[in-house]
Amino acid sequence: MNQKDDKQPRLLIVVNVFHPDRGGGGAIFTDLARGLAERGFDVTVRCAYPYYPEWQDKSGKNGIPIDRYDEYGVHVERYGIFIPSRPNSLIQRLVYEASFFFSLLRSLHRGRFDMVMVFCPLVGAVGFATLNKWLHRKPLWLNIQDLSADAAAAGGIARGKLVRALLGGVQGGLFNQAQVWSSISPVMIQRLQAIRRKNQPILYLPNWLNASMAAAIQQQEDKSGQLPHDPVRLLYAGNIGSKQDLPRFCETLHASAASFHFRIHGDGGYAGTVRDWVEQTKDDRFSFGPFLDEPAFAEALHDTDFFVITEKSGSGGSFIPCKMIPGMASGSVILAVSDAESPLGREMTAERPGPWFSWDDLASVPSMLTAIHENPAQFADWQANARRRAEFHERNRVISRFETAIRSIVAHPKSIPSDLADI
Image (tube, rainbow, N blue to C red):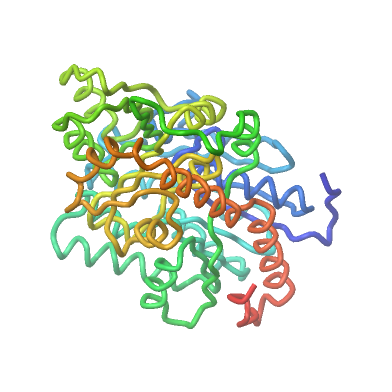
């Protein structure tokens, strides 16, 4: 690790999920903090106690006390947060957001930093970072992983035009307090251009394969050229919430006569619904298990033919799944169902790492699975495309771009360079 000194930028990162949380971007946020620390930055992370995607206090420490410790060169500060028992309840989600904001307020006067970077989807985190900017007069960088107002509407959390308008107004007002924006897909960049009011630079910085997951995948044998199994193997692994609409995908497969084995592993607001469905249908083509750690995830990816990613219609304009990257890096073919104009839909049709289906064409999935053994060349092309696209998400390339931009901002805090988007 590089030796830090007083000339190195002091960076505060505000985010809700951090190691050991992996879902919801936790692996990416953790890896960025550690990667910047490796490059000599003095990095402090203010985050919640681990809870995601299980929506449970995993450390047993969640509450009023603040836990401070160092790991991998990063100063970590844990703050209590209200953990919803019903994540899809609007009231509980509002309390969840507000609790993190007020919990973080206790640190408002603590520490001196050259720049603050905040990650959205939690608007409460963005609100705290905005107050920090007003008080300390330091540059604020907003990384938008998910448009919270859109996601709440798509997930059924926010219903009614008035509620959606209020959430959108709060979101837009807070976003425009940041001098620099970044996001993770060209579709999101286009969406944000319509929201910004101050011509802020918007950097396209895709997510990447975090270091520990890359190491876990490298421990597996190369599966290039591996033909699909008989019966064909499918894997879903990750967060199971309303935005995935996974039950609809399962019902379609269940109603078919296709031969397959579909392993489902995950946790989240709708995990119990999917687990109960698997148990009640007694269809032995399906199995359900808990959220996988990275070594087990890498092994499951190695053993599968298709890695399944589903996005509920109407929700895909607000995010792109991080789990797509380890799927491609493992050489697994991606089987995706989403809206055509979503970031995932555009990625699938442009890069072709596997078959893509709209929700209107969902009934075609079983026939594709049945016919895949008759077209090994198509399967091999999908595998090759997946591996090629994974190279775009290489860790050092993306983190180095973060580093370059941060150093430029810290060097010119009063007049942030307008050409940052070209980095």
